[in-house]
Length: 347
Image (cartoon, rainbow, N blue to C red; front, side):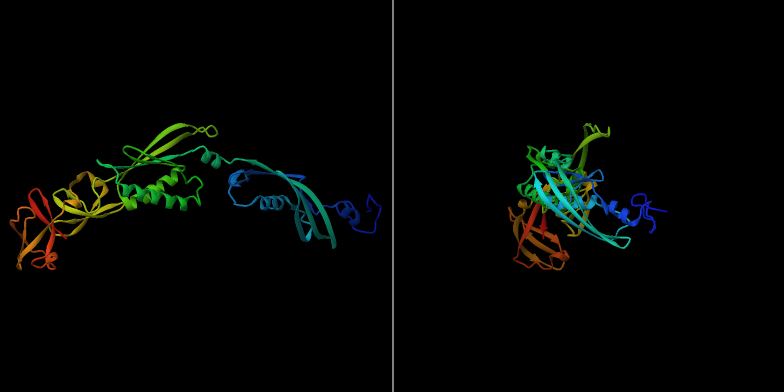
């Protein structure tokens, strides 16, 4: 067998050519003359494998990454070494040089390639939505039969701000586009429905309340044909606050704490704590506020009873002894609450 290019018959042929002629036409790698990278001008996200990915890279690193991803080294090359260089930048164009070194059939080869990386700058769907004020959910903060207190709004603002800051690290749509005071309360417009639901859970952990969701069809996704929905999520805080007084069924109690699952109260008669689930909220009646507490004096104490004065008429009132009254002494000033003509000691 002989080489059809040089006529040599002294060496083994590689793909029909002698090694010398083969290496003259051999390329260490394949590289397109132009590489196009679609890039978001706002967040520097890139389209990779058909999806937008936020990598957080500056443009120069994006160019080098594009070069690396588009270099295809021949499997025949051993001990390959590649150097990348940006020769010149012209707006969205970057002229680049690639120097490749490698060993093929025992011969060390060095080759130089040139290409242009074009940054196709546009705006990704997420940034487009953010810029347009897009939102998927509205959190409606309300209170039952009362206005929201300023401290409740301040706490809600803080909870939403802190948790959005955490959520946006994994979900770019976790942002607030609008905060609107309403006659009934406060509305928060949230970019992501998933984020809104997580925020509701965080709000309930500290504020309690009842949640109601109302999805509304707003249109249709042209690409998928599926309906586009926005969800209004109402968080209604209870009529009472911590330290207020309630009646639950036939028990009178003071609210001590609350969370997303239950309300913790203390019975006004036996001083025992018990919990009420939010599903039983309709059975709770507000009967007094912390500011309704009055002060009076303990005038007598026996092993079986204590005596206090009515806070306004100063008439003596006897009450059965309670282990929680052990720390009280004659002459002590005590807090009391009057409910339907009956006096309760508040500890």
